[in-house]
Length: 211
Picture 1: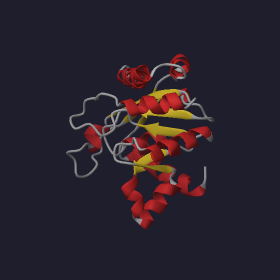
Picture 2: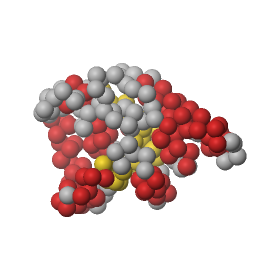
Picture 3: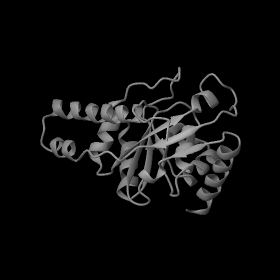
Picture 4: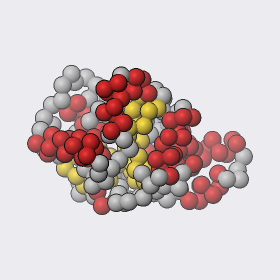
């Protein structure tokens, strides 16, 4: 890890280990090297650092493009491998940047729901994730976070000392749908994008809290 990333990685690990009494389950499902898409449910601002600092490799994160307009904030986000995307995460420039990170062998965290839950329940997946998966060759690892909504959900002004857990599922293979997408019609292609996103979200839902 580069120094700037390692500093943040260590600080977040210390916070999660002490204040939140974190648990990490099945992190060996994530490849140590090579491209990988980490697709997780989204309950809190805690989710990206929780998922990333539990792994012994650098991770690429997505951040709203508007945040990069502030010089100091932008510098920190770039040091921590953040990719600028528009509010919906569907812009062409953002998608290209994400695919470039994957092509370079990086790992990227994405949230199929597109935004944080307002009630603690998992929502529906957006088709944009399916587009990203089909355009890449990276395996997809479903990830589920537990406790982050209770610790720092939308209704909380400050984080609470609530135990959080991150669980990594077995990698998913979309080789057949990627092959079909190369020759299918445009209507079917749109169906494939949503099908991929839905299958990933289903895998996330099915990850149990128990080890």
